[in-house]
Amino acid sequence: MATEIVIETHDRPGVIASIGELFGEAHVKIRAAAAFTHESRGFLHFVVDDPDRALATLKRNGWKVIGSQEVLRVSLDDRSGELGRYARRLADAGINITTLYTGSAGAGDQEIIVAVDDLTAARRL
Image (tube, rainbow, N blue to C red):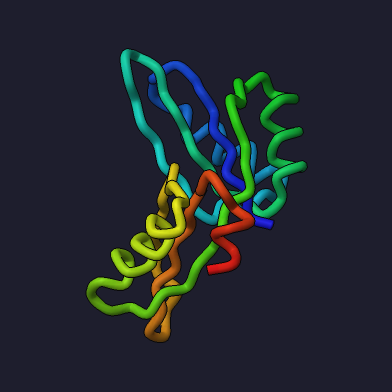
């Protein structure tokens, strides 16, 4: 189960390196990541497959986890407009995308990872 974990920290050099090293030592694979800063605070989003291990590692090492939620991994055709078509289906169903990660899956596919406000409904689409 892919899970997004959000960490709040001070905006300073080495934060991502430290968390990446911790996850490496704990054998936690990072499937996607994003980092943002605002007013000297850092907000780090990591999508992992072993949330229990990741959360335990972060908490044991004093990191401030401000949220976690299961996310949806979706494979789209790798062609123009596919993200728009998929996002429109969610929007038309009243489902809000709260976080979006993109990547490449290879062989004509594009993988996206989405956090949504109604995971059950999004899975049905």
